[in-house]
Length: 124
Image (cartoon, rainbow, N blue to C red; front, side, top):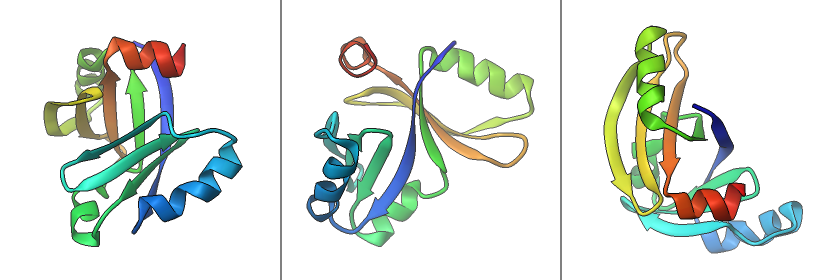
């Protein structure tokens, strides 16, 4: 299992207002932009920007980062071996499979296994 990409999460009220500065900072357009579960997301550089009403964003606020991995099943096994636990079971979205987990030390992370097309396009 390999970590392919890690995103710092940015919480914003309005994605369209947040993206111009990030485009300038990163020097590129977003790699991804889509709606999911009441929020809008954009992946730009090493940021995952999550926008929407505070009550919708709060549903995802426990995770401190989004980590894209090569094998989500291996993550589940590693979590169990090191005292961690899955807090939101494996589900799917347009980007692939994902879960939320709490590490034994208390960190909460979203893990994502992207569809092959995204891996090829974004990671290379």
